[in-house]
Structures are given as structure tokens and as C-alpha cells.
Length: 64
Image 1: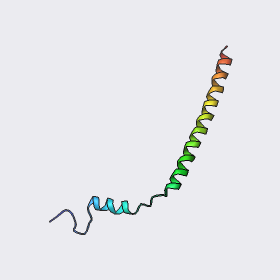
Image 2: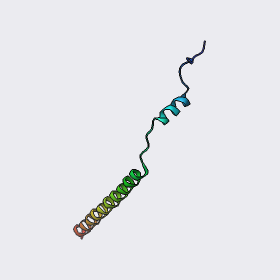
Image 3: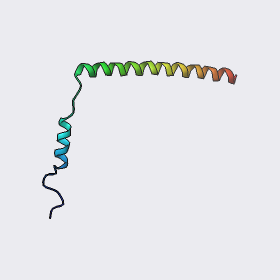
Image 4: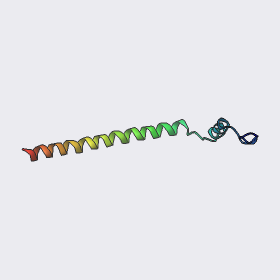
């Protein structure tokens, strides 16, 4: 008696079936979202740098 039923697909057949169900976004959508992520990251980085500089200035001012 086999541990594997005859009608059950193998693991890799299941992976292939699920992979075929994926709908990939269009290139234009990927480019727009990537640009938005990069711009947002740059803006947040600038804000964090400015806050860091202000806090550093404030601490050095209070330490004197």
C-alpha cells in the first residue's frame, strides 16, 4: 500500500499550478511604483537628517 494517493499532485506540480495563477503587473506600473518608493525614501531620509541635525544642535547647545 502506497503512502501517496494516486490523484494527489506532487509538490512541484502544485508549485507550477500556483505559479501559473500569478498575475504580474505591467512594466509601467512597476516603474511608477518604484519611482514613488525611491522619492518617498529620499524625502523621509532628508526629514530624518534634518531632525537629527536639530536634535544634535539642541543637545550640544544644552550641554554648553
